[in-house]
Structures are given as structure tokens and as C-alpha cells.
Amino acid sequence: MRNSLADVVAAALRVLDEQGLENCSMRRVAAALDVQPSALYHHVPNKQTLLALMADEIVLGVGPRVTTVSGAGTAGDPRRLCIDLREAMLAVRDGADVVATATAFRLGRSRIENSLAQLVGSDGARTLLLYTFGHAQSTQTHRQAAALGALVDAGAAVAGPPVAASTAADPAVAGAIPARADRPAADLTVDPAVDLDASFGRGLDLILAGLAAREAAEFVTQ
Image (tube, rainbow, N blue to C red; front, side, top):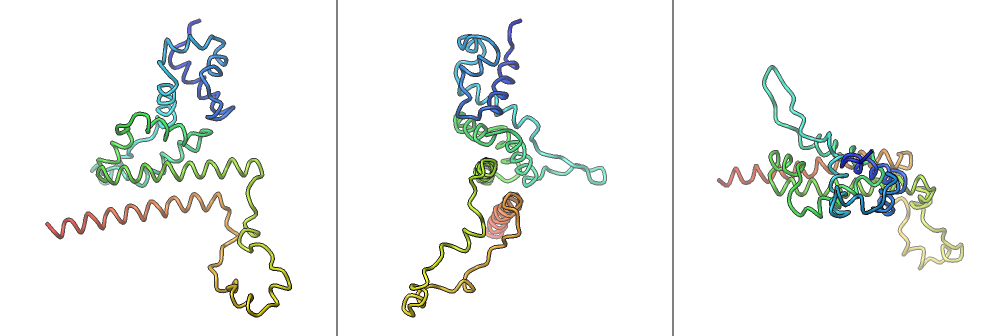
């Protein structure tokens, strides 16, 4: 039976999940469908187009949430939209890389960027989008490193390398080394993965607060 475009995109997402973006080649997608690579070009002209279609599928369910309060509709929430976008990308292996790459290839604004622009303006939308992409990519890298057991122990990273006894005993050298009590303490009880999620929310709040402050300042000067 002849494959459809939807079959090709679904196969590409399966290869992505199994082997990652680096190994998601047209040849491997074709093998997953048991066809020759040339057969894929009846559906997509190149890999960039296939990536764009994969990105569309990854973020298919992401969009402004319009709620109703006392029968009156309220505008979508840009914060919630960014959280939904990040979660959608993180739900798929290398999903953030796929969506960010596809957005760069298209050069113009994406559907989600257009939705954000209606809520916070063009500059705010672009800033939120790039922040969300970057944070999701960082989170994915962290998760992959954790899965491979490649993360540096947080306690060792904060404590730093041991100081030789002879060096520590030298008053001149010891005075040049700030005491650990003088340095900001890291909360080693916080799961880094959980903190990444929390830090994303804090970053969104900072950006949105800045956008609101700029809007207020512009209103006053009018």
C-alpha cells in the first residue's frame, strides 16, 4: 500500500524517538517505511521540509487557551502558552531542536509566534519564543546527560577541588581564598530537573514583568 504524507511524518517521528535528531536521516525514515529514499521525495522536497512537518506535529496541540469568566471570554495567557510549548517539545526526544530548527528554516513567524504576538506584541513574542526554545534545549541536554550518568555531582561542583594542606596553611594564600561561608550557598536538596522547570517559570515572569513595565512607561509618555 502506498504511503501518505502523514505516514512519512509519523515514521520520521518514530526514527527521531529511537535514534535522535542527529541520526534522523531520509534514508532511515525510508527504511522505517520499507521503501527507497527516493520514494520520500514524492511527498517532501527535502529534509528541511520534513523537519518543518515534524515540528508542526510536535506542537499541534499548542495554542492560546481562552477561558470563560462569568460568560465573558478572556484573552489567552502568554505564560501558559510558553509552558505548553516547552512541555510539548520536551515530550519528544530532541523535540526542542526540531522545533527550533524548523522555525529558523522558515525565517518568517510561526503560528505560535503569531499567537504570542497578538498577546504581547512582536518583540515580546520573539523574546518569549527564543527563551522557550533555549530553555527547552538546555533541559533536554540535562535529561540526556542524566540518562547517560554523565552529570557532575552537584555537591562536588559546589565544594570545588580540595586545597592542599600546605597551601591552606600558608597565611598569604589562605587570605586570598574567600571562605566558603562568604559565597552564595547552593541548595543541594533540590532536584536539578525540578529546578529547571521552576527556573523556566521564573524566567517567564521576569520577561513578562519587563514587557508590562515597558508598556506602562510608554503609556505614561503618551
